[in-house]
Structure formats: structure tokens, C-alpha cells
Length: 482
Image (cartoon, rainbow, N blue to C red):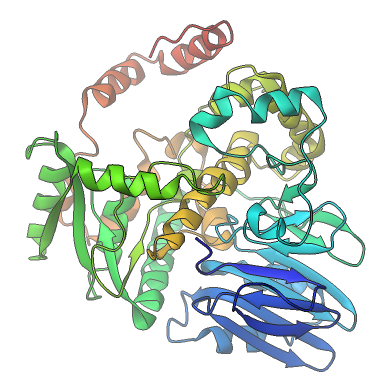
């Protein structure tokens, strides 16, 4: 349950037999399978938990990368430089007696902390070994975290958790332990719109570089489906010795587009493709094991490791640049709650009202779209992060090559009309460059299901955005068109 987890506390002992490092007046306890790397220079010390990858220097190790970071003089330089890397990690930075802690681009390596800033860890349950978890006394928070709406997903909202005194660190923020506060460090500069072709070329090189860096350290496996993300990962990994597969549900036809299309794609490059059937019995047994803690209560489609001693490359995080939340303007807290699947419950609305009041002006000033950033920080920081933590607990390591702040910023620099979730011209261009304009690859359809056909029709007759706005309004009163 606690595989690859960590705990930072002033307590001298911890009940689990983990490795231990001293960081000023704190003790860092970490699971033996969690990779630990440290570096120091003059009065600065960096501790890295997890992995970090350099697309431009794929041969660089964790140690080589943080040896460069530790020589930087200011936090601003640190945040600017670390943005060019991908990976899932926790970074603890100490300068003299000042300590800060933050995580990777989309907070896939989770950090929870108590409201008194005395202990920090990767699960609320870990912190409860040190502090007493307190139930919510706010009526709407208490109602939400005991509701069927929460139990349906078991995902936290914003920086809150199911306990009053344990918080969750959001992406693009760091914790200053001495000052006992949480500070946003990104974005800081205006994002300039860049030409589609220029971004696609550079993004292709970066994604390929990140996958190359990962494959130099690990054996890799990639699930290939009919969608955008896995197609890009497949094409960017052709120079590696990756395994390619798809998970097939028992009731799934062999002609399903998530099977037929990747079969065509992999055959173009003479790559072996594995179709792995998920059996209902295995899934049931797995879910029973998984319901022992609120930290891991959900049902996943995966049954542990499929390929022994491999890590799995995921297309997660790339959704940040695909406009999944649409094109609506003048966004309200209710809109955000509905878009994120929480109807109009007052607790999510209150949290998203605070999110808007804190961030909307910053995003507008720096030319970032609110819905892009909300998807990044709320959806990726909670849904995707929890999925990653759950997989690790099952001895299944998943790495998202897209999890790079420089890469996501680059993708977001393209006009939103080219970054649609259903017809993404930017991703089509990336596929064009990664395949060297292979006609057989370029002509393969993306997720050709009935829903996609309806959406394409709505777009063709130029009513899709209108439909989206009407649908959002109807959801506020309990109706859903589609």
C-alpha cells in the first residue's frame, strides 16, 4: 500500500522499516523502492525522490541533473530550469535553515501536508501516523466528503482532503516550510502565441527526447489505442525497444477501433502488438484488495504488471493542451464544478470560487486560458495524480513523458482553435513530423466512434460551441443532452 511513498517529519522514528535521511531539523523517511538522489553545493542541498529526465541530454542521470540545479543561486532560477525536465518526483530544497518542498509539473508524485506545516507525505494515511486527522466541521465540506458524489470518484477538491487538517499540494505551487505557507511559482511570464508548425516540430523533438531518456534507464511498455496520445508515444518510441499492447475487455469486439487501429499502426513499422484480455474475475479480486483504505478505494482496469520489469509510458497530462473543457468564456464557479463532474454541490463551487478569485487575474494578465490552467491544476493534480499513486501501490510504475512544464507551455502557446480535443490540428502535425509524413500513418482515423461522428457533424455546421454552452446551462438544472 505504501510502495514508493515518503514522509518528512520532525519525529525521529517511524513504524515502517524505511530508509532515513536527515534534512536540517527534519527526518525524511522513504520506501526502499523509491529512488533517492541528493546533491549539495556551498549552503544549498537538494534531495530528489523519484526520477527526472532531460530531453536534450537523454543520457543524463538524476544525479547529473540535480548537480546542475544545486548550483543555481535563486529559487526563481531553480523553477525556471527545472521546467525543462520531465518526470515524477518530489524535490526538497534546503538553503541554510530554509526548506521548501514541491513536486513535478502536474503533481503526479503527490504531497499532502498538515495545516501546521509539521509533516509532509504522499498519502493522508501516512500523515495520520504522525498527527490526528480531524473531521470537517464545516457543514458543506462535511456533507461533500460523506456524499455519494464523493464516493463515486473518491477524488479530492482543490487543495482539500477528506480531513480538516490535511491539505493537498496543487501543481505549480511550492511549500515554504519555515514561513508555513504555499506559494504559486508558475506562470510568471506572458505566454506568446507561436505558429502551429514551429510548435509541432519542437514538441516532436522533446517528446522523442523524453522517451529516449526514459528508455535508457528502463524497459518500457506503451498501451496503444485509437487515440491521439498513445499514437504520439508510439511514434516517438520507434527507436527504443518498447513493448506495445492494448487491454481488451471480455465484451469487447476484436474489431473495436482501440484494437483494429493500433494493429494497423504497429504493423506499418513491423512492431509486435499484444492484445491482453482483462478477465472479470481478476478485476473483482483486485478491487476487493483495493478497498482497505480511503487512499485507494477505486476500481482500476489494470491487474498489476503485464510485462515483468517494465515501466509503463502513459499519455496522461497531454490532455492539458486539448481543450477538454471547451471554449466557454466568462466562467463561473458553477461552470467549473459542472465541467469537472460535480454538479452544483456547494462545496466544489466554494472551492472553485476561491480558485477563480486567486488566479483569474493572473492568468488573464499572462495570457493563459483559465480552462487550460484549471484542467492542468485541478484535473491533473487530483484525478491523474491519484491514478498514478494507485498504480505504484500495485507495483506498476507509470511515467508520463508529457509531464514537463516546458513542453506543456509550448503546446499551450498554440491558438486554442488548433488544440481541440476531437480534431487536434497540433497533434495531427506532431504525428506528421514523428512519422516523417508516412501516408499510411497520417490517414489512420482517431477514435472513429459514433460520438466522434456526431461531434464532427456539429463542428462542420458550426454549432458545436453553441451546443456546448447550451449543454452546460442544462446541466445546471439537471439535464444532459449528450
